[in-house]
Amino acid sequence: MTKKKIAFICVHNSCRSQIAEALGKHLCGNEYEFYSAGTETKPQINQDAVRLMKQLYGIDMEQTQYSKTFDKIPSPDIAVSMGCDVGCPYIGRDFDDNWGLQDPTGQSDEVFIEVIKEIEEKLREMCIE
Image 1 (spheres, rainbow, N blue to C red):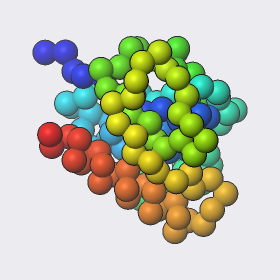
Image 2 (cartoon, rainbow, N blue to C red; image 1 turned 60 degrees about the horizontal axis):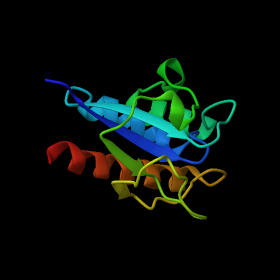
Image 3 (tube, one colour; image 1 turned 30 degrees about the vertical axis):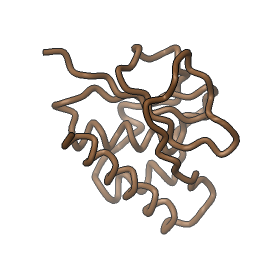
């Protein structure tokens, strides 16, 4: 049986979408294939996200992930917007869901952890469905 492909989309593909890809693989990678992408890229994944994911889950996102644009991933079965403060990018189709998460970039560890836990909760709901 082919696994459904789930893509998490942000503008820069450096923080929330990367966290969702890593946690998705960690929590329910046996059931789904997870990807993240953006309409633009950053030279590296957000270093606070990298540090906290390593600290909280033992996941080193920089080992298997990098910032990439939407055209560099397989066509997803499910596309999730992480939250577009100024409008979601057009990816050639409608989004299946918008998680409406705040961007924790530049904020405290507490804000980051809150967003990471929100992503974990939404992924657990998604994996159970």
